[in-house]
Length: 429
Image 1: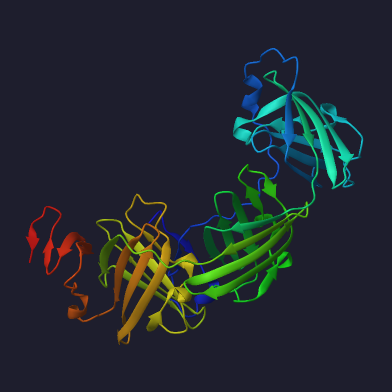
Image 2: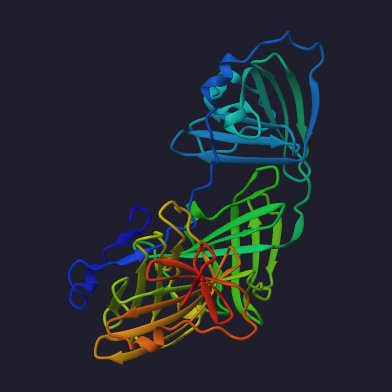
């Protein structure tokens, strides 16, 4: 059970028997933007070479400057997409750096002033200068940097008029986090960009369709972007709207960054992919658990575990009753997940879920769940809780069914048509 995390819900105590808790699936992890990184200590051990007579000329195309009140410094990054230079100028004032003044390495925090795309491959400076200048379209920069390996650079950046980028998003992931923020956390990506939006004070059933959410609705620490070069995009304003599309949620988002560049993000949901394989899993009453918090939390969770294989599955519905028909919109993703065996620590996220829960007695239910995994496998899960008539547990296959792997009573079966075989290929009656 080391893969499955539990979350105690205090308000459930009155209606849920002692010791029960919702199983949760750890998927997307919220992280703050790594805006300011210290150079790694290993850079000081790099082999030095003789300085070049003439520094390498670099024309930076991207510049960012951010003040860190906790350190009293202006953190400036200049990049041409290949070479990135960072200068951490300590001024102890939020007033922007002085135009025409040349800051040297003595004015900088050397630990945060370095060359490289990331701190794992960073090279520190033995000398550096940074001169901000008033440009026609904003702040221009001229800088020099001599690295600990002897290489030297002359960097210039000329601010340009703000640009507008139309960005077609390829993938969207969303996860709901409960207390304390009750937020929906979105990651939108394509090959060139990644944008994150953390919209707080929401409900687990999803955002309000058609409503425009702004930066004031978001947790700023978890809302940020970056381009293909790894340069951070700090939001100045955001307009975020989700709408119901033909195949799921569509999104229209506008981001304005601190340099007044505008990013128009669009995502149109595509039809769900066809599964490449079907796996049938039937959990007996001994293998199934039910947490009924429908009256207090509006949540019901079915979970099952196979002792032999270690397969674990749990699906949570947003509902005020146990029995019913459910779609993906009725599923709480935080408490829904699937682990294939005892060594599976990543789990299989769900692309889509449909389910029917039928009641067969005062405390007997069967949940039949179609769980389309991100691995493009359709997991046909059956949870039997309490006494469910035996015939209902029988495996049936359509005449045109392909070969199906099945786990029943702790045994792996291979079903083809009306015949079942064990893993050795022997027919099972």
